[in-house]
Length: 191
Image (cartoon, rainbow, N blue to C red; front, top):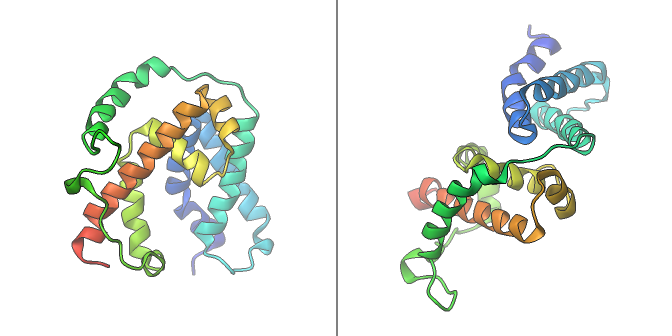
């Protein structure tokens, strides 16, 4: 029989990977994951089983990460990200005509019934792979907004970027995720 300790420990690598992505500090990520696992162990009576154990653990982790982000001041070396952004800018611009409309070859594909796709667990595995292929900074901003549900001002303050830059990064992340999903999921006939 598997104990609760073993079940919690099995999710540690996923929790740690996500915490490292968000916090960019290995030691702080270790601390936050440890606090998450301790909190889950201590509060295991509160786990009613209405959601998967992994979902419950990630909700605890999410709150710990938000607390950590709000509790510290740090700076980001934006100049280190410049090459990554310039390369993407050039590729991104080729997708559109001068009037801002999609070029015919790059027009988004029909995704069928998205609600049905979201119900399939395999979709989330593919989504996770696509998310892991985003540039680290882009993925971090996307996850701060969509998973941690931080508002734009908090993200900009934490990363020391402008709101305009944040919107651009979020747009790029969504575009890259869409492209990856079209190639890896929707384009293979799963719809």
